[in-house]
Image 1 (tube, rainbow, N blue to C red):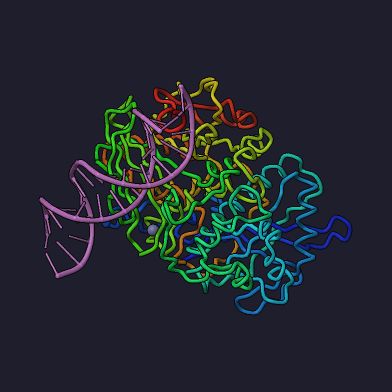
Image 2 (cartoon, chains in turn purple, cyan, orange; image 1 turned 90 degrees about the vertical axis):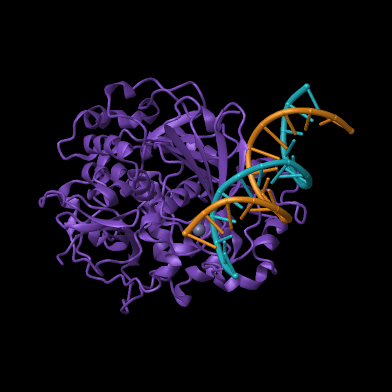
Length: 512
DNA sequence: CGCTTTTGACCTGCGC
DNA sequence: GCGCAGGTCAAAAGCG
Ligand SMILES: [Zn+2]
């Protein structure tokens, strides 16, 4: 196996010019250009033709932190708190971005790093988001920004020689996502005891030491959404939190099948007729692990029955098969986007600035972030045909549509053998990208960034849709990018413009 | 037999 | 308080 591309982003101290902080973005081997890789679609494995060999796009996969102080043991980087803080501050100043540090159980920050202890208290916890997707998103944004304001190149490439061993990958899968749910929106101080006891069922203090991680993987009680009788989840005085509690990701896709296969196992637990839609809505719950809190709703679009709307909620508490990773990541990413510490509420996302910075000139697939919905919802619309009509003025609603940013797109790559092109491609100039020896090839844990893949994978099950999607993606990603590419290119600054699509606004889920 | 689906009852929040 | 709507429960039925 050859090597893939890797990217190291390093932040130098403006004064000393010494690198003080950085990230290693290691692409997944199977998503590296030039490598044929297997894709598992609904059980049958297929090999996807590799992109052009000269494709140097970088797939932003795993993110590892390091600092100059890193005394690399084989598998651990030690990051000094000061470094992180300084770098973060600096980046923040230069880019306006809030950089979130990560403690994900991968390049574990060790006990003496100062951070882990910091994480212990709630305040810090709020700032420390352990969600790769979020980070990645920020990073990408950052890069874009950097590129634009090509100031003192604080970004430099350097070969990645450190190994990021993925020892505890398990963690990343389960722990990470779960956390943000607890970080949730609302008001950090006076954490609501109620929620705590529900999930932790112990004194909050108890697990201080392991705050960065999930205590026991099988937290069995996925408390029902509503927090039924036993535990009045929210103290009436916090209406916002009540409503913002959970983020959702809904995927719209054309499919004749009653349900897209997303790699997970689901058990139907209910079905209702939803108002305003002749088609019933089915409720499913993930059964891949006992306590998995993830649920999804499946419903056909009222306007166009051929469109299947699948809405995910929650984060899996267990490792996922590759095919399922994507979707899980999507939801995770979405949730984190909405709930992450950096922006404590959906408002954060609604912030034009943020959006502007986040937008990437890509894809016709749009992520719709809806604030009007009862739950913060990110809608990924995969139904669009690559037609020119898609660019229209956005609806007047409180929705912003953004070309899928960081998190999601990767998926496509997984399925189609492309890298998430869009990003890398445009955001970073070649020189910033450097080949790096791939640490471990084939980490079985797809990076968190692989988001949509499940969606895609799933959707791909449907031949019809497959064709459509393939076409769409081709037009988007296709090296010779066509239509979508160009107009976006610029459009991306004002994201809110770019947008979308036809027939059905997201009405079904956003509004009433 | 173990699992999933079906389906009506039940719960909860919300607006009137 | 009442009724609606979204969501969940759980017993019974269905299935391999
Ligand atoms: Zn699950």
